[in-house]
View (tube, rainbow, N blue to C red):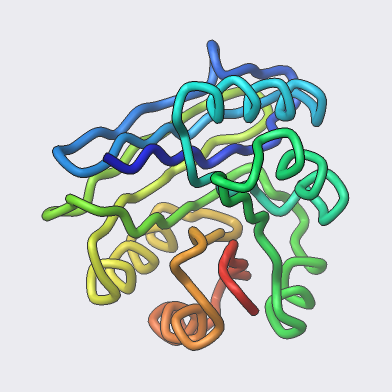
Length: 181
């Protein structure tokens, strides 16, 4: 069974106050907020010790922090943080608020999309677990309908897949990916 975590930097929150679990027969997934980078490092270490092998991090995490986490977690764990291509970065820089955050995760064992919502004073997150690209395109449109300010994608989304999702929403909000750009 795949154990996956998507970690978000949410000031004032912790995995105890800002998290959701999605589980099916093939995967166990956690989406969690951490209040700072040190808390995130400790949480990654704890989860890696508990058998989590894939971590995606929101775009607040940079290469240096990601590398530090990777060293702590070991070679059997894969850790990636969200990045933006130039076009999407320009749109991201123009945002006046980042309060409403959307996440799309392609996960083993998903049949019908599964949505979780996390709310806090600082950030509301709406994450949708999907099984494939058609569901991902629909999920992106739903996130736009729910008025997210930006979207980040799991590491399944490389550059061509990212572009498909951007086109599905006519590029109306910036989209980053934890996948290869």
